[in-house]
Image (cartoon, rainbow, N blue to C red; front, top):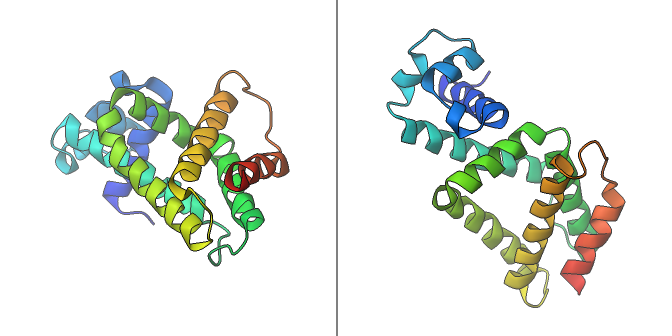
Amino acid sequence: MADRRTLLADAALAVVSAQGLKGLTHRAVDAQAGVAVGTTSNYFRNRAALVAAAVDRVEQQDNRILQQGALEVPTSVAALAGQLATAVVALAHENAELTRARFVLALDQPDVVAAGHERMLSALAQVLETMGISDARARAEAVADYSDGLALHTLTARRGQSLEPTVVASNIQRLLAG
């Protein structure tokens, strides 16, 4: 079972996903988490601390999703593209609430989410460099841009449409090999 801070951070993400940052209050998180009024403020004294906890939780969850099914570092572009495609599809569909919360936080608090985004880009660029892929940083940025754009469109303009993992993997493979 998750600890209380994690439970409250997850509840904060659910509130942000459903109501935006304007709806993010200590009381709303208490209600979402099903805990006594005042519990959230005992763990996160002010709104900035609550937002920071939500941002940290987004990064933790994104990392968990990226690592699902990844038993080892991929040794081919096709394998890496497949892993990344699986994560993008998961973020756009079964983890849509998390992705909505991430976008809300990113739009309202870009400086707060920038560090996590940089960590993700650096990790991907490092994997690409290890695989001998040229222009690793630029390709990592292209994959991140494509993935975020695809997730955003799947949650908005293409809502209700499913993503085909093989198509997503093919597009990512083109970005990595291009």
